[in-house]
Length: 99
Length: 501
Image 1 (tube, rainbow over the protein chains, first blue to last red):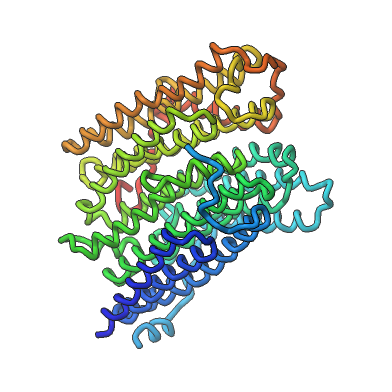
Image 2: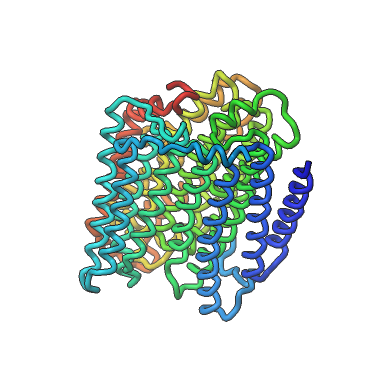
C-alpha cells in the first residue's frame, strides 16, 4: 500500500519545515517553512482519508488550506509593517525586550 | 470510492437555534460593529465601543436561558455540544470580553488608536472562544483555535508605529502559527490512527496499549496547546508579547486567550485521549512543575510591572495545569475538571482587575516600572487597596478569591492518592510561597515607599475603568468569601457524557 510512502514524504516535509522555522532568520522564509509543515499535514490527512475510506480527512484538509491562507495574509501584513518601521525583516534583530 | 457515496447520502442536519443563539447574537454584533465603523462619521466613532459591549451582554442572555433549560444539547452528530461545562466557559469568555471592552475604550482614545476595526477583531476573537467551548471535533477545535488566534495576532501589533508592539505581534504570530502547525500534525496522526475526527470516537478507539505512533500523536497535540497556554518551555513569546502589546490587549491575551487554550486542552484530554493517560499524565506533570517554577523565579527579578504580570500569568498557568497531571486517575478526574474551571473563573476576575489598575495608574505615571507604584496609597488609597486585594488573590491568600482556586487544584492532586500527585502538590506549595515574593514587592512599594518624583496629584479614574474594577473586585471578594458559589459552577462543569453529567 502506498500509505507508507505518503507518510514518509509528509514526515520529511515536516522536518524540513521545523528546521526552517528554527534556523532561518528571514521572516518570509520562516513563513514559507510553516507552510511546508501545513502541507505535510495535508498530505497526511489525504493519505489517511484514502486508507480510512471516509471524507473526514478531505474536509479537514480543505479547512487547513483555507485557514493557512488567512494566516499567511496576516503574517505578510505584519512582515510588511516590520519592514516599514525597521527597513529589515531579520528576526534576530527583534530584541527590544529582554529578561 | 466509499467516501464519495457517503457524500451523496448527505442530509442537512437539524439545527437547534436556541443552542446556537449566543454565537448568532455575537456574529450579528460583529457585523453591526463592522458596518458602524464603515458608515459612522469620524467624530461619532466613539459610539462603536458601547455597541461592542452591548452585543457581548446581549450574547450573555441566551447563555443564561440555555443554562436554565434542559441540557445537554447535541448537534451535528456530537461535533458541537452545549453542556454545562461549555455554558460556564461561554459565560466566562463573554464577561471577560465585556471587561476588556471597558478597559480598552479610553486607552485607545487616549493613544489616538481609536479604530473601529479593533472592536471587530476583538468580537471575532471572542466568537472563536465561545465556539471553542462547544467544539467536540478535531476540525472545529482547530477552526475555533485559529478563529480566536488570528485576530489576537493583529491586536497585539495594534500600535503600528511602535517597534515594541511590532515585535510583540510578530513573535506572537510566528510562535502561534508554528504551534498550530505542530498541533495539526498531531491531529492528522490522531485522525489516521482512529479514522474519525469526532473526539468521542477517538476516545473510544484509543484504549489499550500505548504504541509509539499513539504517543507521538498525543505529544504533538499537547505541545501545540502548550504554546497557546504559554507553558514552559513553550512560553518564550509570552513576556515579550505581553509587554509590547497595548495593555488592554495584554489583559485579553493573559485571561481570555489563555483560558481558551485550557478549554481546548481539557476537551481534548478528557474526551479524545483519556485512554492514553500513561502518555499525557507525565507530560503534564513536567509541564506544570516547570511552568510554575520558571514563571515564579523569573518574575522575582522583573522591574517592569507588565512583564512581572506576564511571568506571573505563566506561573498561574502552571497551577492550572497541575490537576491535569492526575486527571487520568478515576478518583481524581471529576475533581480535576472542577478545579480547572474554578481556577479559570477566579483567575480571570483577579487578573483582569490587576490590569485595570495597571492601566489606571499608567495613565498618570506614564511608566511601567514597579517603582512608579511608590506612595500609591498616599495619593490613591482606593486603587492601592484594590491592587492589594488583587495581588493577594493572585498570591492565594484567604479570604480573597484566588486561594480557593489553588485549594481546589491541591485537593484534586491529593485525591488522586498517587506519589506523583503528592510530589507535585509539594512543588506547588513551595511555588505559592515564592510567588508572594514578587506580589509582596509591589505591595511594599505602594504602602511603604514615597512617590518616586514627589508627584502626588490624585489619579482620575475614568467611569469605564471604575465599572471594570467594580465587577472584578466584586467577583474576587464575593467568590473568596463564599467559595460555595464557584463550587456550584464547578459542579455544573461536567463535560457531557464524559465526567459527571
